[in-house]
Length: 262
Image (tube, rainbow, N blue to C red; front, side, top):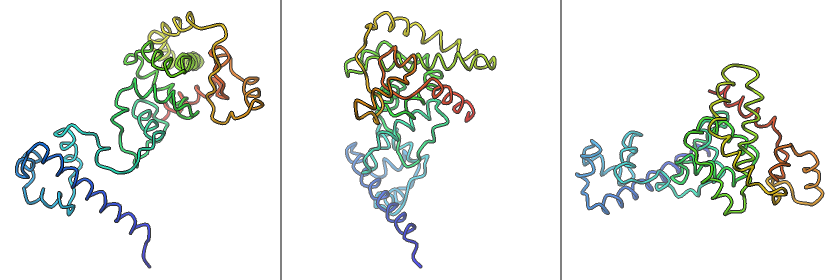
């Protein structure tokens, strides 16, 4: 009996090989390199590189990384698969400290999400609950690398000015809650507070008394649902004008889960 899944996998493998072969050949010719030139840089024989460029062979992982460095291209250049933005953000968050978020091996790293600044911005714009709460451990681990005022300005230009301050507020409150349990959490709280509280103070000073409502949850599709969400909103959500069912406990759980997965 023919294993249809195995046949499909082999067909996809062949297509991937041909795609990589064509792209490498294109990049090599653009540099005006001969096969011998590239083979030497990859520590391959010319005949082996010729096989790979015909789609009859594959690079090792190490050789493929050298190819990326030689031509200064991202892995996404070697696939026709349209990127899944949500999964790409999820993978980036996992690599930056949200270890409880399972990384999908089917999604290539995005060259647009290489910097923590870009990852946090895109996660805030995505707005899905799992992505948003996964920002808590990322903010804690990468506080030194963030430029909150710059992020705030970018989000403000897109009509999402309060989201960053709201997430930071929830993250610090969640850390403060956990810091009562162990010295380790207390130490993390002190470090994060030192880096993030200053921005939060500035954001509070600039906040309008009645900030424009930002509807975060995609499930809010009617006035009735919005009113229900607002009645049960957390203190931070009401303060920053964020309409969401997310509560402080959700950020606490995200921090604990990321810590447990460490």
